[in-house]
Length: 571
Image 1 (cartoon, one colour):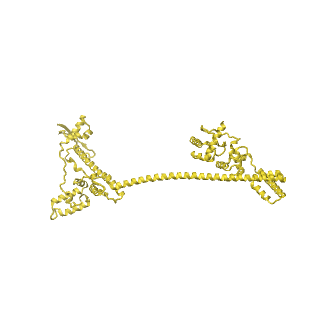
Image 2: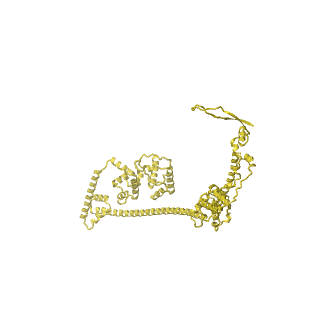
Image 3: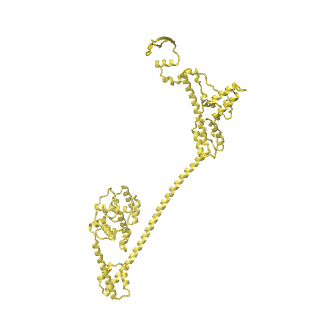
């Protein structure tokens, strides 16, 4: 036995009200015997045999310690039908709290001992039934103990024809355990897809209130210590967790099997698959139609370009034939005038002056005036025409002298030409060749700007040579060269193609489009020229420009001429 000294402090009252003096402590000897779980834990800790966590968590050791002692199992069997005692045997777990309260008061009026014919034993049973069903926690425990069919059908039992008849009772029966009061119904084939989705969403996330505490193995009230009570509670929780997991797995198996067998789900998936395939088919068809439309438009452009080219060539040929015809007529008319001068001894210098400056229309007008006239009148007509033409040329020369520009103004005028105007001038000079009637007027109309014919002719002379030429087709006769920088890349130059050489002045607006070429664009140009071969026609350059990305017809021509010019300059 051990002894412990207990100190007791007793207050002593003093005569002085302001102070209080306590007496010396007295000792008491108490005998006690160390025993119990707490003493054992302290001894184990002091001895270093274990720590506090090991004592709490070592369930195996506690099982050996308390397992044999706690042999009494809980067997809470239902001995009374509480719903029947309250008259609710028909509705049972579906009865509301208000229904239970009303039934209880009604039964009390009948069986209360103070009433005539009352039964004290029955009243006590009714009171116990109400105490259980009126308490939410106790009612859940009671309802969970009632007999319940946990079975679910197998997949072989469910077919497309009997799906709703077989599975509806199972879902209705298990709806008892739902924490939510509004449980969606299984429905039928007429149920909308939105309602079907809500049904399966509810059951896939099913929350159950089913209480498996009636499966507890140990009664916590029989525990002799707090440690034993905690151990019992852990064992009970483990058993409840096992049944809860089995319950969750059972419900999930039922829902999975229903989802796989549901004809509405099968139909919806089939419809979605068909719709997805239809969208893919429509996309492919739309892509095919776009490709066909693109090819059709390309072919249409090619046909239109060919038709325009044929029409242009035909018009040019007709114009050339007309020009040759007029030229032959003009030569015949000039020959007649010369023969007339020799035959009638008219001044040949005047005749040559008129022939050199008159066109076919002017000469035809002379011959119309000659009709029915004698020699003297014809001489007078020729003299008047000579004097009138000479006076007109003299006046024109005076006018030109008055408005003649200085060399600096001419240079500024040449530099004012834009890249678009130069491109149009290039096309116009090629489209209207030398010898065409009113060639410069047509070039002026083609450009469509306010440039005068004199400005146009001056620009052509400036870009071709120091001497007056008839267009850019003779640009290989250049005598004025421009000091252009060499290309930025080392290209393989091909000089065997028959293209006129043009040295492009840096001051013109399109210089950057000639020199600012990437290696990829240069390779495309070289491959296109090599593929087509001899490049002598305008349509050859059209085909080349189509093979070079982001480059126009003029860009390709000027780039080639630029490279040829640089190579010639370096050689």
